[in-house]
Image (cartoon, rainbow, N blue to C red):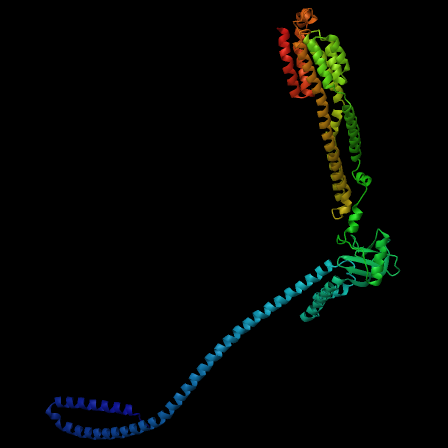
Length: 544
């Protein structure tokens, strides 16, 4: 049985302690127990010797154990150090592996993100290609649609084909891009290709196209159908529009057949035929105005006729000669009544008639003489103004009729929109044309009529203004004459002035107010004020 050294030592220590305690106890007892102590002492000595022997044996065994432990611990320590070194290396390798794993995970995330970006770019490029295919078809001339139909369909259908890979889809779309680049190169120098087109009779013709920039010309195989190619609303086929002139047709046919030579060129980018189709004669333009246009034209004709008649009548209105009128004033100043009548009879026109009436009443009261002359002025004024109000009515009514045509045209347009919708512009052009054309002609009639009325009215006022000035000048000269004035001896004016004034006084103000009102309306306020200012001093003089 193997006893641990530590256990053995512990037992020995405990035994010694017990022995000492026993000795102390024994010594304390009575001397009567001396013999028992001796016996116990010998036993203790024996025991101590045994214990000592055991201690020595245990020490020897402990020393042996220590030597053996020392011999076993050194290899174990070396092995421990070796294992610790291996653990350190393993930890370093684990750290490096962990770091590499993190880097690999980050690279995987970056690679996944890059792959997603490339997929998005590929999808965006594919959408761009698809949009380019649609735009390419819309930009093609109607004559080229047949030529590039296969490439366009291949590019558009490749996107919808789920059996194709992305690279195959890109290849089909890139093929369309190559075709479009080749087309640009060909358009610079012109290109000729086969195709079909529909002639003006609706027959499909086989032939050849020649395309130079925006201009496309078609020639059938038999050479009968030659013309430019356009697209019409509601048709997906190229329509042949024949040339209006034979030399153009022959030149176009020759250049399509041979591929070289002069050809008709359309600088309007294919709109020359459309512009030509919009041209119309004056009769056609008037007919588009509807029923309202005819009253407007009738009013224009009547206004023009009246204006020409008034212009001719005013042009030939005779005016008193300034020299002869001065001779009349000289005769009045000299008091020669016979000479004054003779000279007045030589004056022409309405002004001469007015002055003749004044000379005939030269010895009467000035008020009566003035009223007689103003009567001639009013008669002449009414005659000159005749017809001018009609021109003014035409100038005011023509725009109203044009507005009426505009309203009816817009109403017709909305009716057509209700029936046919707003998709077809040609269905709406009739009502819009009626609306705009009637307004146009209404203004065309109104503006010249207004100008003619202003010109003729001014010319008529000029004639009456001259008559009025001559009348005032004549009346003033009569008033200053010693022979015909109020103070002339034996003059009828001097003897009857008071009586005539008494007879005319009650109605004189009313007559003058009426004359003034008529002058303000017919001649304008300025001439009327001039007449009043010239007549008022004479009236005061007569009253005096």
